Amino acid sequence: MEFRGKITVKLKNTIKDVRGITIESAVKNSFNYDFKVKTGNYYEFSIEAANRTQAKKRIKIITEEILCNPITEVSEILWEE
Image 1: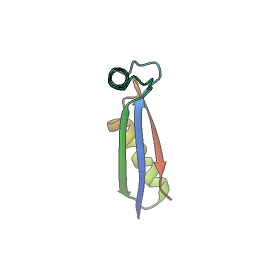
Image 2: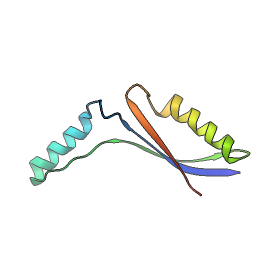
Image 3: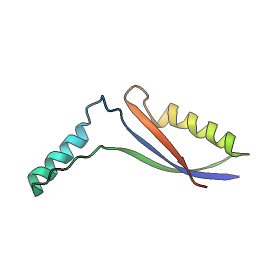
Image 4: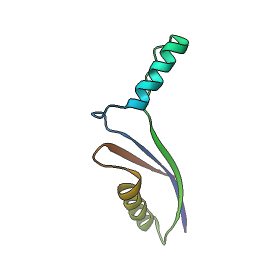
């Protein structure tokens, strides 16, 4: 069976988001708007597995070992129904 979903990875709140700060500054300087942004990464996936439990285990491993640095980042996995 094929399972699909989305993964978001962003910096923990305790980590300085330099890219976000740069974007906020550019918006403020260019448009004079107060703008808050938090940057991160977004992934859409599809995975073959025998069942949803197996798919969840596989995606959890991929996320924790490849996509997300648990020291500085947090992740969220959203599954399509």
